[in-house]
Image (cartoon, rainbow, N blue to C red; front, side):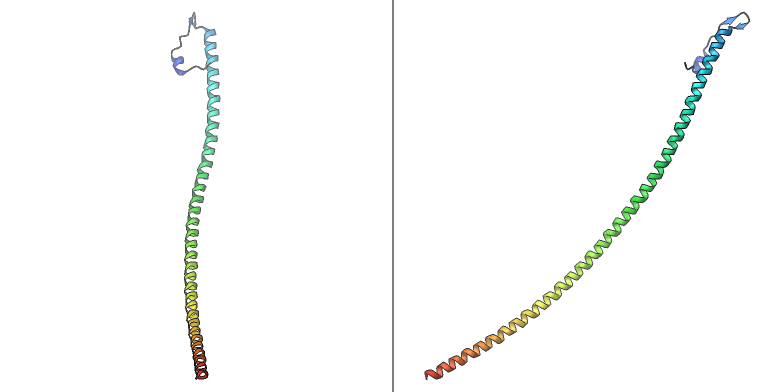
Length: 141
């Protein structure tokens, strides 16, 4: 049985011939001692629990700090990778444009060459047709 300080203040001990009755005082002292022991045990348990919780709190604070550091590092790394990827993409795009321009120039040159050859062949064919026409006209006359 736990005795509170308020209950102690309102205790009414029975008086006997030479003061308080010994039996009731002894019982009261025994109850007070038990209550005090129980309170000290609880206090010790609470102190142990507080120490345990402080240790957990310290670990959680340390983990939080580590997580924050990791998060900042991951964000920095993501930004760096994104910038590097953009830089590489720009480089690839620039190379692709250069190659496209080169291919276009080569295609235009090839087109001009083929058109020139086609004109030569046409001129040769026209000359051959004229020669055939001249030969046919000379045979007919």
